[in-house]
Length: 439
Image 1: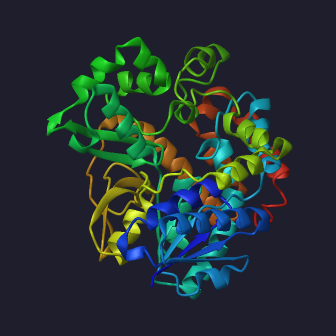
Image 2 (image 1 turned 180 degrees about the horizontal axis):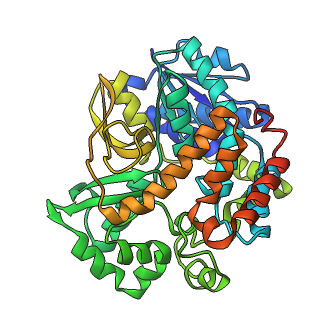
Image 3 (image 1 turned 60 degrees about the horizontal axis):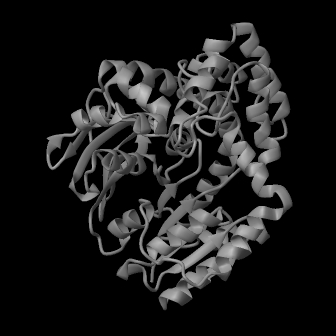
């Protein structure tokens, strides 16, 4: 009987869907699911959901919920981490302080000033979790879904011996979107995607072995498709390769779309997909869900349903676990791992998102070689800012954090050096309860 632990199991959507996926594999029908969170209310909801899934599928699996991390981790074969350090009232500083200085953020969980300070809050908690993994289940396969993905994975993969792989659904999600645009069945599509998290590009995208980029270029000329993803489609038209993460996210990673109100209006307001780039999009979603206990009502509504689907979803996690310690069917996916000989023209040791294969031997990445020069220029800036942020975190060096923010493309397009320093100082002051480890 295998044991799979969810740390941050109060993340109801992730826990519910990933447990459902795990149980679709014959090797895991009798799995022991362990749920751990520091929020007892959210933990109880997730436990109810898992029991409901087990009951509906008539699985011989078991579930145990606990507030004790050591108890949850003891002897685990696999660990999924989906934590959030600080709630919306803390997260709002990451968004509202930059906006006061003119840096307009849409999501703010990945990079730039908002993503960096989210990382600085989350890193100590993530390190504590991984120290416990080293102690209680050192050989476990650890899959991280917590953002900011690249900085957290780079930090943990350098500071611990934990076998951590970072996962993001933007790669397979975008591949499916492009397939729909050109009318290709997904099972006939192959691709090579590489870069860094949320700034990975499809270096190849093929339909039945033939280059499908000419079809994508034709599709993007159609107004209804162009308008779905205005930022990403503009990036594609300018850079010749398609990027993974949604327009709202990508609009804050470069200098091209959010440095002036007229650009925000033009590129980040009228897109028709889920997140075109509205200011504080996710923060406002958090507050909306908190209002009048809406998140509880939504969960209760799901828990009352009997007609939910048990079919496997599109996330990587369960397939990776199955490949490594289930029935050992190899599985190819994109992993967030440190760059040791994987991408030649990105910083050595930074966290990259590259093709990998999971098997009985564990997770092994594929070497990509060099990215096209225009992509390398863009991605190097982000990757080197992330390297500065991680080094600043490890050394408790505020100056390196300032430099990491200073060279962020959007921040540097809007602010002077002095203005950036003032903004960073204010963000340190606002987050001081979480950042006492800085000098």
